[in-house]
Length: 165
Image (cartoon, rainbow, N blue to C red; front, side, top):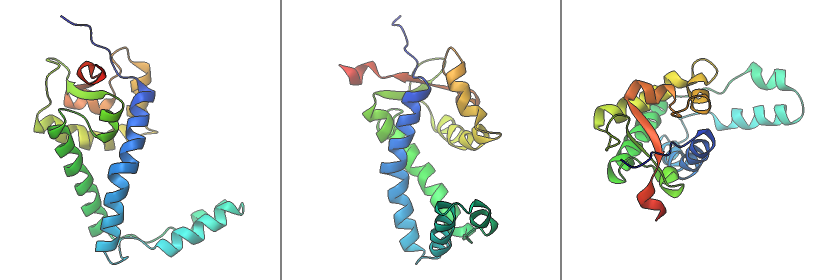
């Protein structure tokens, strides 16, 4: 049996960063324009940024921009669906994971994940954020580099030996 090399915290962090840039951000732009600017109050974000940059954090935090729950849910659902489609197409990898040669696999068989695991893992990200992103921090603390979302879904992230050849 070949040796499994688990993907650690930082490689997974950068894969997520790339996915945000190349997957979530384009979806956000499309949703924002589809909402005709009604997804969130961009002018309030700009004003809050100006307050924060001038050192007035209290004023920046005093009034949060209004958002549309309908458009926010459409964005979140779109990102989940697109992520799962990438996992299915690229055998457990999103663009960021593929670029960095890591992939998500079933923790027991090291085979492809199924739809139930994909959905559980996606929703598990929410649980991993509460409290204080501890579910993600677990990746850096465990020998098998599994976060809470991995444990919930029965998955593990490993280096893709086929991609590195």
